[in-house]
Amino acid sequence: MSSFILGVDLGTTSVKAVLLDTASRAVAASHSLPTAADLSDDSGIKAKEQHTGRIIDTLNRCMSHLPREKLQQVRSVGLTGQMHGILLWKEKSGCVWSNRDVFTAGDTSQLITWQDGRCSSDFLSSLPPPDSHLATATGFGCATVFWYLKHRPEFLGDFTAAGTIQDYVVSMLCGLDGCVMTPQNAASWGFFNTSSNQWNENVLRSAGFPVHLLPRCVPSGGLAGKTRSAWHGIPAGTPVGAALGDFQCSVYSCMSARTDAVLNISTSAQLTFAMPADFTPPDSPQPDSSIAFYPYFDSSFLAVAASLNGGNVVATFVEMLTAWMKELGAELGDSCLYERLIHCALNQEASDLRVSPTILGERHDPLRLGQVTNISASGLSLGHVVRALCRGVLANVTAMMPAERLRQAGVTRIVGSGSALARNEVLRQEAEKAFPQQVVYGQTADSAAGVAMVLCDRRI
Image (cartoon, rainbow, N blue to C red; front, side):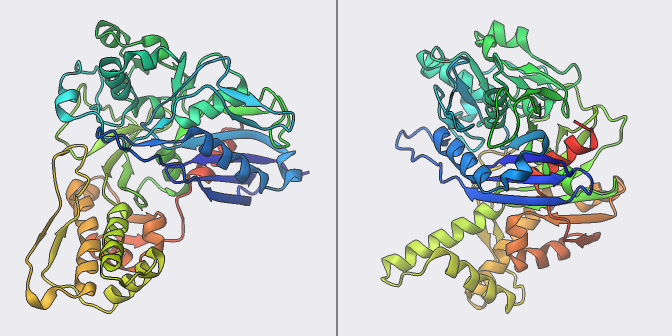
């Protein structure tokens, strides 16, 4: 009889669940749904939060679309999801289980996501220096706790545990006291030393940080516990892996050789390759560097140029045009407009127009803004502008990680992936122009499949 591994990705905009056949390592069933969980912010602090209950409701609806007879044959469960963000909850009442093998969110905060902007540069500079090779940025879990400690300390007193959204689901499934977290997610929070795999407890405690909220660390690819009860047909007592980072899982799903680099353009954009097995990251943060080193598996690291500006920039351009058209009384839906814009750009050769699309800044340069230069009367058609915008997205990524750096690392192939790259042929054309290495597609990065593959390969 076939057995399966369930992989779940709790992403920024959607939830995806896949069932991986353990024998063939092929996806036997999958379903994805948008969360529509973003909350509006009228506070003026650049908050970016999502409704926890809606995310868990979307997870339950997604699970209900998978074949129940296959769910009953699930051997293990893997969770991944958006990194950096933080969710707080009360250990004994963090969720409510119904008699239909389903849980809903209980006493929790809203999810403060990786896109949160409440921690200004001045605020971040006031924090103690971390004992880590990774700098701390706004949207990172520990920075957010420090912000609440200064501005709303009573808020923290309502909760006894904290983690990423994927850590929360693991804790609820297993009925854990507190939270367990892998180095992949811990490093994304800041104030975590990847060499010792320990939090900077002394540094944090000296600064008044509530260290009791810090999760307990377990190895990436290891076990967190077992399901406390049946869940959507998955039997009680099924092993659950400790939650992993969605970036690492997406890379795992499509990097087939160490000479591959993975270019992923979805909401944001990342370009990454695997460092040698004996690589050791720097002793301290390199805040001005555009390349960071993320923990991967078995004490190895990925070199990552992680841009905040990817498909979201193109989406913002479409939203801007839609708003302009509405003001002019000529409304057209975003989806239809997007397709027409791509068509215009496909029929338009490149011009001298240059768009620097960094409207969201970058973590190594948070005050950076976008620019449009080399404007001429002959290069202002929609096709010219859209192509220049797409070229700018790639130019920004390759400026963060130059082709020469890839060549020195022995990279011979770029694996292109991500929803924006899949949808936008102009982005693909510009990617193929941006790299001297061959750019290939077809091996789609899939975090949900990736986390299932990790458990399958490790026989969890």
